[in-house]
Amino acid sequence: MVLMVGLAKADSEYRIPSKRNSISLTIPGGIHEVAKARDNWSPLPAIRGNGVNQDGSFFGRHESPAQRPTSIIEAKVILEPTGYIYNGLPIFKIPGNDYVGIVLYVGDTRAEKGVNFTNKNWQEVFKFGGNSSGYQGLNLFFRSVMYASPQERIPGQQIEPALTSRLLVGYIRSRAIYANVGKNGIRNGVTADIPIYLEPYGMKYTISTCTMTSPQNITVQMPKISKSSLDNAPVNRGLPEVYAGIFELKLNQCGAYTRNEKFLRNDISRVLITFTDATDPSNTGSYLKLTPDSMARGVGIRIYPVDGPFWQYQGWWVGLNSLKGLNYDANNRNVLQRFIVKYAKTGDITPGTVNATATFTFSYQ
Image (cartoon, rainbow, N blue to C red; front, side, top):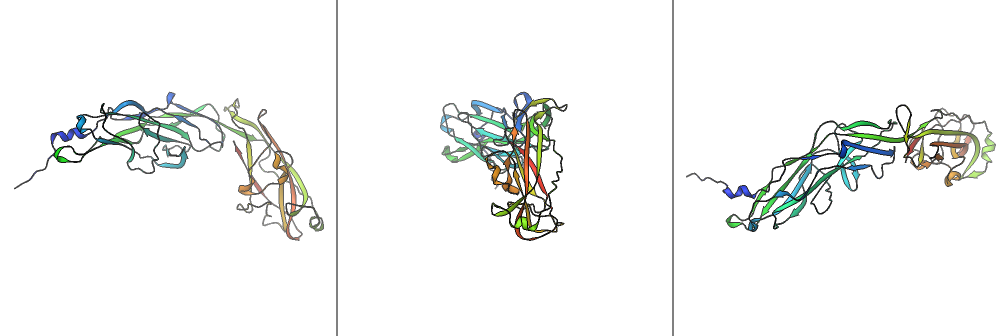
C-alpha cells in the first residue's frame, strides 16, 4: 500500500501576498548633500530617503474573517555593518564607499520605527492580528549617513557617486500563523521574500577644513642654561621650569573652497589641536620626553599657549589629554596661536644636549 500526503487546495490561500514584488529605496533628487566641519560627526549628517509608505494596504489577505491569522512582518539586511551607530541603529556599508552608509527603518504606518538588525537572519519587525479590512500597511525607508570623514580637503560643490549600481539591501516578508482552523489545527503561511534595493545616488561634499600656513616642521632653538638655574627655578605644576623659547601656528582659508580656491561656506565653529610625544607616543604626562640622541637627563619640555581661552595657564598635556581649542577667528577664517616652550626638571639633572619632538594634529568642529 502506498500512502500519499498532499496539501489541500485551501492551503494556497494561507499565504499573505504583497502588492509588490520588490521595493526600491531612493534619495530625493538623487543627491545627498553634506555640509560639515571635517571632524564634526556628532550628530552624523543624514538624509531621509524614500522607500514605501503604504497606508494600511501593503500586505493583503484572501481569507474569510473567521480564518484571518496573526501575522508577523519580518525583515533582514544582508549588508555588512560598519561598526558605527546612528540614533541607536547600526549603519551598514555601501560596497566601495568608505564614508557613507545606510540605516534601514521598517515599521507600520502608525509610527516611524527602527529595527536593530544585528545579523543577516530574519528579525521580527511587528505583529498584527485579524482585522476587518484584511490588510496591513508598511512604512519602510532608509537614511543615508556619512559615518566617516576624508582627512584631506575635498573641493566643495563636487558630486561623487555614493553608489554606482543597484544594490540589494535585504528582504521583507509576512508570515501568517493560523490557529484552530478546522481539523488541521495550527497552520503557517509565508509570502515570498520581497527584495529591497537601494538605487544609485551621488554625494555632494562641502567639507570645511583649514590650510596650515606655518612650516610643516617647526624648530625651536632653545638657549643653553645652567644646571643650577633649573635646580633653583620657580616651581609650576610640581616641577621647576625655565623659559626656553616661543613658536606659533598659523592656519587660514578655514571653510570649504572650490578647486580654484573660490570660497563657498564655512561650517567650522572650533579648531582644536592634539599633540603627541614623538619619542613616546603613549606618553600622556605633562611634558615631552627627550629623544634618544639627547645627552642630558632629568629634563623634559613643557608647552604653554601664550594667549587664548581660560586654560592658557594650565599648560598642555601630551597625547589624548592634550586636546584643546585654538585662537580661531571665524569671521576672518583663520587661526593664530603662539606657544611658549619651557625646560622642566623631572629628576636628577645630567648636563648635555636637550631635544624633544612633538607631532601636532588639528581637528575641526
